[in-house]
Image (cartoon, rainbow, N blue to C red; front, top):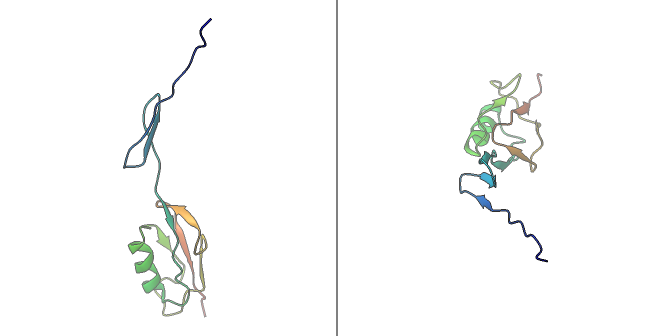
Length: 91
C-alpha cells in the first residue's frame, strides 16, 4: 500500500504576498516605531513619515512642546497602516 503524500506549495513574493495552494494574500509590512521622544511634534511627525508611517496624529501636534512618547511605543513593530499617536503635553 502506498502512502498518500500531500505537498503544499508555499510561495512568498517580494511584495509580501503569501500563497498556500490558493490565491495570494497580501500582508502589510511590519515597521519598527522609531523613538521620537524629545522632538517637537513636527520633527516627530517627519521622522515617523520617513520610517514609513503615514497615519500620525496628536492633539497638540502643531505645538512647540516636546513629544513625551507614542502609541504604539518606540521600539515595537506595527503595520505601516497603523495610526501612530503622538503624546504631547498641552501646557
